[in-house]
Length: 179
Image 1 (cartoon, helix red, strand yellow):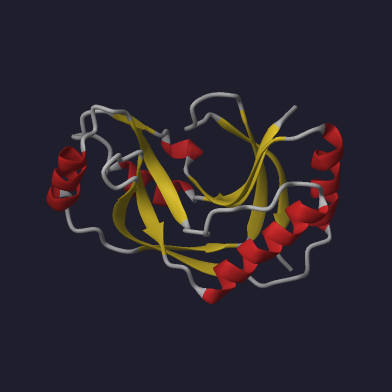
Image 2: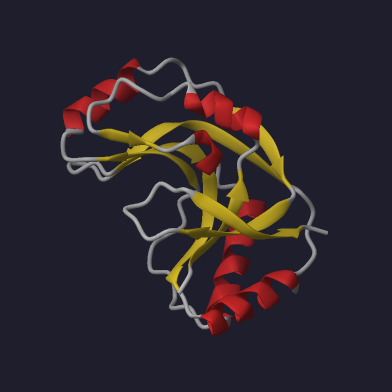
């Protein structure tokens, strides 16, 4: 069964800029820049019928124009038990609408409803136990000023991932351009 998710690809020049944030945090398992993406909807392991129905739904998605994307700063998930370091993405209405459409398409394909609130981001590192809350706070406070990074998304990608603890490598299985 493939492990699938939909998302937005990160242009190489944005990936290179994000990669400059790598290093200096004990317990961080850094994501390779070519695996950076913005997840719209994670499905997990699905059978072939769901995967086929998902592709059909994505191909029939309503036409839309390109979406401006802004990465606006560094943060972490997990609070007292940090689990990921990420670049936050501005949740502009067009991006939120796209994600809501992805949710509808995946449910029609047979996926369970997503229970987490959509928080657009680019994961930069998965954090092990050695990445204490204090170390993460120190890293974030000492990081250079994060200048906003901007690009325009013009398609949704369907990615697959090998079964692992996360972080890639990811394979682009199909792309679905906007109008």
